[in-house]
Amino acid sequence: MRFGLLSVYIIFFSFSAFSQDEEYLKQVQQLDWKGVADSYDIASNDAKITITENEYLVLGKDAHKLMLLNEGHDGFKPDAVKLKIHVDESESTTIYQRNEIGFVKMDDWEENIDSDEMLAEIIQGTEETNKIRAEGHAKLYIDGWSQTPFLDKENSIIYWAINGHTSDNRQFVNAKALKLGRKGYTEVIWAGSPEQFTNAEAVLEPALASYTYNEGFQYDDFMPETDTVAAMGAGALVYKLATGKAAVKAGFLAAAAIFAKKFWFIIFIPFAYGWKWIKRKFSNKSE
Image (cartoon, rainbow, N blue to C red; front, side, top):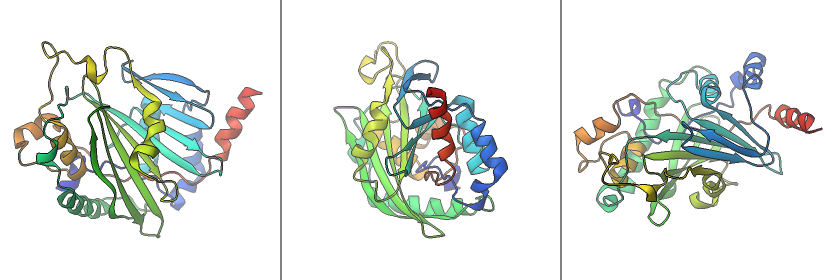
């Protein structure tokens, strides 16, 4: 089934009554939130995430728990989830996950990227995923590209963005970047409203700037004599992540080598309830 593999890989945080349940909120509040402006190690100390004022972060098992509370399953385990509260009190959410599949070459882009074909697969996969959503979670529908996949070779980053709506008519945009590194790539996913979105590079720039590979683990640190090369290049990787299907030219074995485990096709939109407590929590700590 297409939705059984990692596809658009956008995650859904429900605005449903479930998200307003007191027990749910209590468990969210008990997570180890980081709210002090600083840099935090993630992914076996290969990289760091920096947060600034009005940004809040959960890492590792707490990020996993947050996803479980919101999704009702543990099919997705990010390294970090960051919440940003804007001046107008609106929120946007960014998630980060490292994927060490080997060094990803960028020489197969044009032969594997077909945005029309990819969009059709994304729409179908999202509809299939609606069938397995837990009771109380709104269904999600993809409306189109906000930005088709784009490869920034100079900075070794891939971007794309999808827009959609929920069954109760809430609009969302999901922008995604793959930041390539020496050992693989990091998925950086932004979720917000159409009003907050300009283009993928702009909305993801703060999240990408706050995430840095440590010295020796950046894309340019690749050592061909000793380092592992991924079984597929950047174009085939994006096609696979966006559709859940292997690009024809990448081959089945290449896809199987990278995506041996089962992933969920899930949609990610930001929280919309109950975040005043987190500002109070860290305001009190600073007094």
